[in-house]
Image (tube, rainbow, N blue to C red; front, side):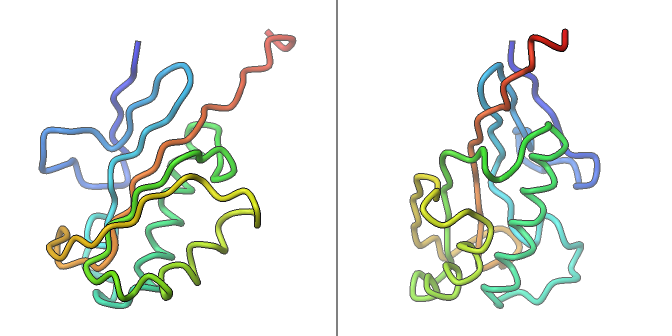
Length: 134
């Protein structure tokens, strides 16, 4: 049975959805923007800064579930301006082991939440439970 969780460090979603849905095999995290997580403290429009802040938050959310970015199998990225993909990639690549990048889609979405430049959604495999310890 899936669990529908909201991250207590984030404002409750203003839409009918959850921050995370967790089942026996995967963790699904809804799209996050810097506007969702920064309380207005981030510099909107700086793709590198926004990407770094969102990726760090996604990393912490996975760690709360006993996982890490190494468990990510799929990422969806929305950029307000697709011409900024090189700036995004220069930061994004640092969060994964070279040669072990998740499957990814990147699209241009000019009207992101709160005027953000980047929105990132991900899906990660749940770590296998150690049945010998039980």
